[in-house]
Image (tube, rainbow, N blue to C red; front, top):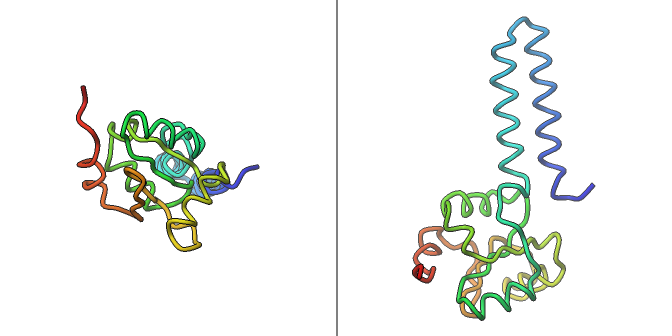
Length: 145
């Protein structure tokens, strides 16, 4: 099991336990609502909520060609999730690198942050920005052609 799936699985198991307790208490409607909430949280904190990750080397190559920023992130990071949600559809225009899956990406983040793995780290034109405001990131995106 990868680290990226631990939190979503725990949320699903927790939701099942809470729902079972509600059913045992005679509240199937509350059980359904609570289970749905836990499933939604598990989906948000899973890698599925983010665009497909690529390796750091490939992201740097693509960014050099199209000028789009690179976002270094990891599953379970609430600031990464905030960035992803606030970018909306524009998130697909960026190059996303999961530092838990790509050691080269983790090394880029450690170099940019002085040795720790603070994410999200957005690299734009070779310059890193640690946990930038999502509105600022959206403003840095090249205009659509």
